[in-house]
Length: 324
Image 1: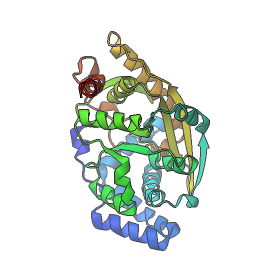
Image 2 (image 1 turned 90 degrees about the horizontal axis):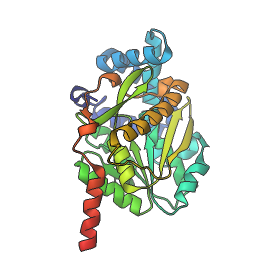
Image 3 (image 1 turned 90 degrees about the vertical axis):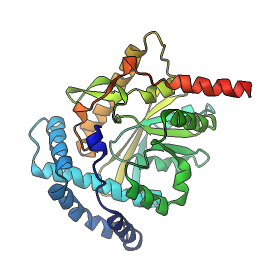
Image 4 (image 1 turned 180 degrees about the vertical axis):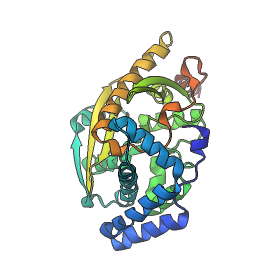
């Protein structure tokens, strides 16, 4: 996203967040869902840039000019998923119906006794991954998340689940620290979940065809995967209305190989394949796409000449361990 979009204020202040939490926790999910309508109206009337971005995206994915009700449905879907985070993170999974597909593929990688990178996106709910805690309570899930992006929401979720902070790798750290934290978690056999569809300001990226036009996707997650030599599994958790979610896993690679000689072309091919799978699920569930900015005009750094090199950071750490 551009710097302007990254600096957009959070949707809702701390009081509104805590009021929502109080109603959700004490009044139940049914009562809390009534609040989704005024929240949707607020975004429709007050949050102009997000509303316009929604309309532009919906016109692209629906193949026709989007209507007012399309945008309202899009924002309502987003608000529903945010609300459900309150219940998912407070351990009330019994209130949801989650259909899981491809779990055998994920288990096959986990049973190798090594860490697994789970590549997700801003499509639907990444918190649906918590269903894994019921399937495999012995496995730890770490999520790479930028705490500074939505401080009020981060504070609220931390209050709901005090253990949450231990499961987060803060993406606002410098790149070397992030890579080292991911490596440590993978070495411990954890599942490390990253959202890999959104570039940060001036982050190295490469283009891929997405919904009819080239968009840019970050290269860093793929470099990290290649450096750590652990399996990569794609995850798509989408919301289907009421209390229904589906969670799909697809093995992308058992060990990602990215040679230095053909780095740009190999990375480009990986990103192209990922963009195809993301587009598949986006077209199936268009109202689940939650990038409320102009995704197709993001400024980026040409990754072919980027100085950021994830495997170099890992090699430095390995060398230090050998000499210690």
